[in-house]
Amino acid sequence: MANVIVMGGGLAGLAASAALAGAGHSVQLFESRPFLGGRATSYEAGTGEEAEFIDNCQHVLLRCCDNLLDFYRRLGVEKRIAFHREYTFIEPGGRRSVLKRGLLPTPAHFAESFLRLSFLNIREKLAVATAMRAIAREGGREDLDHISMRQWLDEKGQPPRAIERFWRQVLVSAINEELDQMAAAHGIQVFRLGFLVRSDSYEMGVPTVPLGELYAPDAWKRVGNVEIHFRTPVSRVLLAGGVARGVIAGERELHADYYVSALPFERAGAVMPELELDLSAFSHSPITGIHLWFDRPVTDLPHATLLDRTIQWMFNKHEGRYVQLVVSASRNLTEMPRAEVIALALKELAEFFPGAAAARLEKAHVVKEMRATFSAKPGLEEHRPHATTCVPNLFLAGDWTRTGWPATMEGAVRSGYLAAEAVTVAAGAPKRFLIPDAA
Image (tube, rainbow, N blue to C red):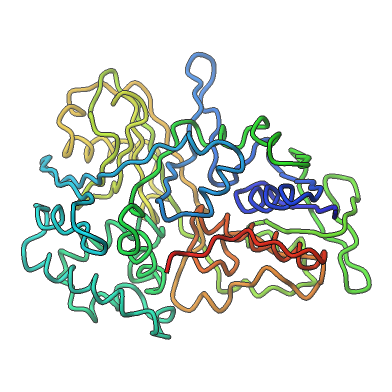
């Protein structure tokens, strides 16, 4: 079996390592930070009695994220994901609507609850239903990566309020980009896989532990031969004679048979300049997470999506007293001072949950993830590289590579599996790890 060096301990690198080790290969994983998970992790905030492990931002998955769920099963942590079958939409003032599966077969399984949604009128519901039916017929279109999701929605005659309250509310959170900056191919994919293909694919999975616990050392004991090196960034891949001969990791030169770079796109070019990766088309989209601790419960809901305001999602982290608020594509908050972000969050939260106005805020924490994801803009797909490179024993992973998905945890795991498959092909013993999307 082969020796493999994996660079980067985010989900892409972890998935590649788990797949390769499970196939009998020996893996050395190098991570620059003292923890695993990359942008999907947790860390200790505060000091002393105030210290608490928090996620850098709330990460969720859907049942259609088959490869991410497979990765969790490899680590034996799949039971630490709680799935929810209802989405609660709340309007300012507190009126609630619930979207959930009904008795009708797929793809009409949402029809009953959808017709009861109070935040859309009948004309808007009919327009959304028409567009949903159109999604099933869009598979053959070749221009979907070159037009924006907003252009597609306008093409389908979607009313402004339906766009703002339904399409934008779902898609900006799922893809972390505004509708006019999002390739239609990705928006359509989210609705097709998440809402139309299977009756359970929409179910939302929320980790019941801090994200970092999902990748704890104990989980790796069951995977195979993976040696993890923390605080050891790879600064250079060494090439000679057209192949990778080693890496500079920390201050050491190390060697293996095969190499997988699972580095973010902003670092990959400097570590592997000989690949001449064209990364000029890539840019970032930020996410802001706002953690609030109150002296009393402010909600009894596990989570909710909040309409018509800056805050898009609320997650109940502990007994309704600790909530996390999420703003995706949060460019308007990146320059806002911390105190103003907290004040905005408290003001808006009270519009949806009256108890928040009476509660006393005990502490707060704001996380601005400036490089949360790449911007899934129109025309980018053709610039996303494949797992294989011009160097026969050097491979690429990362959610920014060509996975068929936007920048999600599922996309990151898919990239790791694709890179691991490429390694096994090069090693002469091909293996399949990737689970294809549902038809």
